[in-house]
Image (tube, rainbow, N blue to C red; front, top):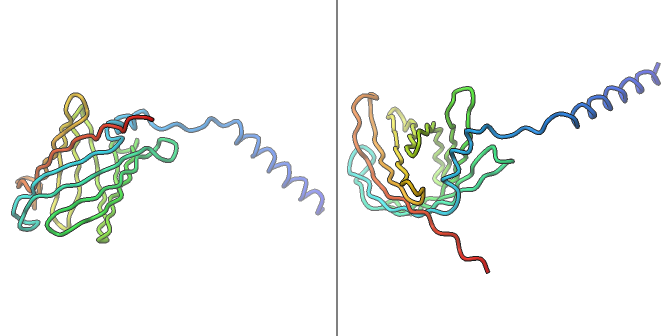
Length: 179
């Protein structure tokens, strides 16, 4: 009886392994290609407006984005410098084929975690997230050459009336010349 059990286990294991070896390798959804303009190194500068998020003021930052995990996701690392000092962040973006949008997990070294949704239509990218009970949306408009863009952020308590809270300009850093 023990031999039969061992032979049955080995047969099932070999069959499952053979079937897995023949399975097609999964590929990222074609929509993921819409994230590609973000690849590389970026700098930005902007100004937060006085309002519900604080007194406002100028800020600068850097962002580096790369594809990870077989091209299914994008990872971006950033450093932001403003009135409250320096903040480092890590962001993961991926396409959700069920909801037909991009989901984003955004984490920073102050312990803040944000879950965002991104919709892309041409060169207009719209981010949406909650900050406590407030709704926030950010709109990026990329230049036709995809090497610069503007980012406007608005906040709302009811989802109907939106107040501008910041505006910035992004510029892609040209790659270093190859040696």
